[in-house]
Length: 128
Length: 128
DNA sequence: CTTACAGTTTACGTTAACGTCAACTTAAAG
DNA sequence: CTTTAAGTTGACGTTAACGTAAACTGTAAG
Image (tube, rainbow over all chains, first blue to last red; front, side, top):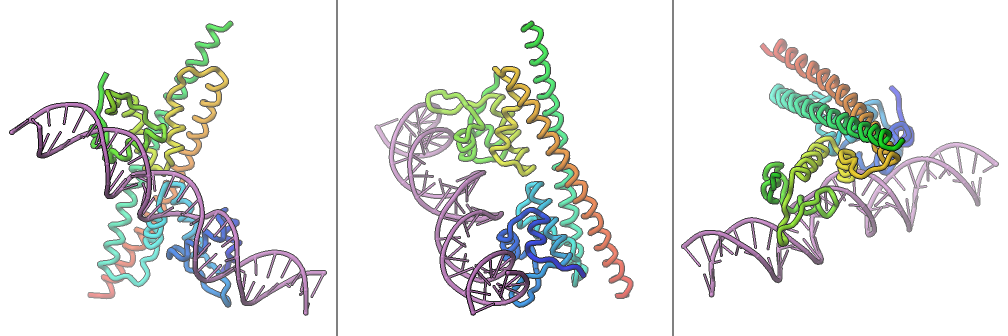
């Protein structure tokens, strides 16, 4: 099983070591220790990747933490599993809303682009 | 031309009046005044809608402010217009990245969903 | 007139997400 | 052994995005 130092992951995902320790204190990462030095495994790596991607989408750390937990139906009973499935569905809906927002923004940006290009064309015609 | 009070827009977009005044102080909104009372027009309404949508996508107010400016190639010369076009392109690329992130998240959520359903199925088989 | 309500400015408070710094330990290199 | 580098734990500082409270003004209703 692959292991990583704090610096390994910090460099890979372009965050500071301070950030990694902060995430641990917030319960997002759970490195083991060799002496007092942190040792990260693949599960932490996946979690970190998820947090970083979440940030690009405007997720708070608390939201990303929930997301991480959705990926571990560890020792969960049926009731818990059903709650997890419900959360997953909510997340999927939220992402659908985001996609819709992005779609609208892209259309608006293309409108803006057209207006710019038009104005450029007009200027060139009136400035020979 | 339609006009809105601060409360009109605050209720429509579910923000507080404090937020609206804050956005004004940050240069995102530019209401006129009747006496000292703020009067908003359609341009402000559009800008506000854009900011709200931006927030759902994780944009900072500074980023949304830039976006707003992209929609007004007002008294811009050719050099400025080209810079605007460049920014528009950057924004479109950023949105493409977001869509990719969302796509990955959705796939992962569906994996998680499958794992949950599997576990549920197993439990039912071993608990008759 | 006064009561009530909506709006205004000013200013200090708050939370999330780290940055920064100090003081320390451990590990490896020269 | 000393230096150097990378790690550690506090603890305090910072920024964005508002919340909250105080003190004031205008205006419509009873």
